[in-house]
Image (tube, rainbow, N blue to C red):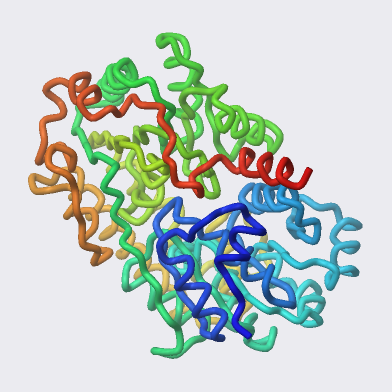
Length: 483
């Protein structure tokens, strides 16, 4: 007998309707079809596998890229009354991990990283489970991080096989056709075996702007001017932890705003504190590295500024998608100077090993190096991948990253519609209202204040869409309705 998914949505989560794509994905999963779902940022991706678990027996295993993201999801589910949920992470002590593993069948939802799942002892415990759904969250990481950063993502194909090839959901907010096919292949599927459910990635409520400046001093001046015109909350992205902290201090001192930094070098307690203050409107602006964002479900972010551009358009789409989730208007502003190009090229030289370095590592496999790229090489050595093949992998990755950086810079330098330039790699059509598309098509830099006022970007209104409500408010409503 078919499950009434809408009824379950209302009774279990308090929502009256699905967002675009959610019901389609759930229906395919209920039919036993493996699915690759591309839903826009803020499109309610996590609800899909959480609801699936409510209406099906067995365990939902969620492969997730970040500990902070896993912890946040576990906390949300616990607030919503689901106690059979755990995140198996490196933050747990040895004894805590053993307790979880020895009681693994007691959990309904298990969050885990690809590195942890690649551990043979952990995998043996997971083989005992009846897995109803195997989820690869932020699935683009398989393609983007697998070859040269977190190679354990490439193990997910054989891991699926060892787990008896369970029903699989790959889910992300942005993935080009090339990335989709790469992820599907690396997960061990043949062409045509996976249903692709893709919603338009365009966010017409986000105005796109970019500015070429001489140096970081001019960038800071532009940021200060921009912040003086807008009263909403926002995120400013940086390429380095040092810059994020420095600019946060300068903005806090010069503007009447509460500004704090967030980056991966902070303790987990400090990161959690900053995140919660931002969620609770105690902070106006977060100065962050890319470590901030995944899983952040704050609805009323009015702007996302890139003090330093990201390495590719896919990352840019992910990061600006955190703006305007309430459906109200927002601005995505990217700043660029020639130094940005050299920052990224320098990072490429540091993170992509040369053929000689790879050859040396292969000749001295027992030598330990305190270097991330050598850790990745050791992964390939351990998997007995031939030297010349590994050299080709890294050479191709370097070229690919250079091409992606060139596309990102081309977006900044564009003299044609930015929205079209941004969406073309995703083969996504777009719509935008007249006067609110991008700074190529519409007047923006002449009078930023007038533009903001005319388009009500300073508005603090919250969308009537019930799924856009703050999750803590939803929790309170659910508890009140049960009393």
